[in-house]
Image (cartoon, rainbow over all chains, first blue to last red; front, side):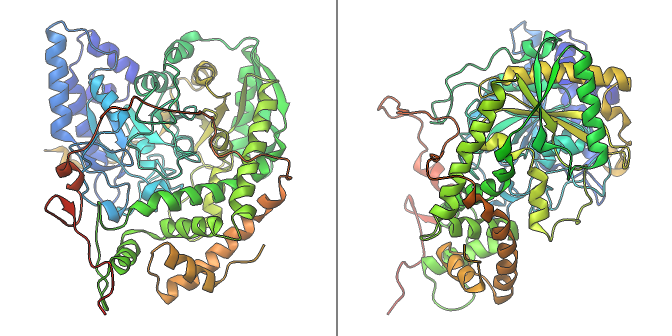
Length: 512
Length: 98
């Protein structure tokens, strides 16, 4: 198998080849580092990575190869490389959160999910780009420049986790970690033709993920196949005493669910409020096609109404900025990151703090901090934050009523395919509308998965299909997702990413 | 609900410790007015009988053993600070000199 074929395999196939001795981890990691060098840099590069962890990744790979040669029993994914969203703290590599504030900052500790990757001996290829502090739907709010969508380099890769999704779509990594507060794993997955999962709130430890909105944030897997995400969630999930919101449930049975291969007799609910008006016609067509395939496989499709989902976006844009304004108060120019002195007048801590935050934060971060400060301020608290928390209860009740009738829910992941870079950057509200279908899951804490549903006829760009399950029933997503994936791939004659255009190779770098 | 104006934004920016130029305040006031208008329907969604949800999956009394666990050394804790001295964070003056 050539290096080019190797990097296009799934993580599960890579793991099998490592176990069978057909390839070494060093070869596998080097093939991905070469791919990163070839397609990620330059003016028209994908720019999925903010930092490439060459030396450590190769050292971990060499160690895996030595242990395997010595007959040591290793984790199934040992030696399979992974990329990490730069919101998750890592020892030995900078963590920037996509912000100038943390440029060059080195975390003194590893996030729990990073400890788990290290325990499984998965080489970390590097840190991926994101909207600053995960605030955005396009990566255009990264202080380090946007990531480009591998399907069309003039389009957005989604956000905030556009770097992780693009890295996986461009075969720069088979797996990546993302974080999802309102859709930051699923929306990039949808627009790049990849798979991404937001697990049940608390199923994966948040310790070491730089917090935006603590009651909504969730770390999850990014991959090219449903099975690969299941394998990765099993690695990173499970109880963590360092996160007081962590669930005690073990992280098992997910890959088995993905391998089950049937949906016969399952009830699948179409959410009336999450398709139709406002959704691109090509998105609707592909969505309806997926419903037909599931029906053909023996699932019963039922229309469900979730009447309060219409309030979800509004509630989200009150709760999220409120929590973000509190969480980001720690960026004070004292404990970590940058410090900027006022250009005139006295140098007091308050003035230094204001000057530092003015210089360190980008526009979207400032917007959300101000909005959150407003929603929490005296006189507005009940009308805004209090009301939004009640909407959260209504959304949970909608989900409870829906899951009393069906096993999983289905919708398009996003209303449209990838838009052009620059198209929505000056219109925050239209940017926020990208997350209309993904936000309800975060408000209710339920798990959600996106998988590629084909290409929209009008623009040839990927469409995402979203599945939602009750809290703690993540396995259902993997079961239904894997079946739909195999039905779709049978129709296409292979993975959707086979149809993505070849990326220009940066020959100067490749020669190294 | 009242609309958000430039004066509000200036006050909020001060509370949030973010220095803002006049241009920034104008721009931010316009953008936030649109956003606040878009989210205001939330206040009409639920009646008084609906309880608030602060946390998606409620857990109560999450405790751990009262023993020293994972802690950073002073050196680690100070490693990313913009300024430090004698094992402590160093800050500019707290009070204005009179």
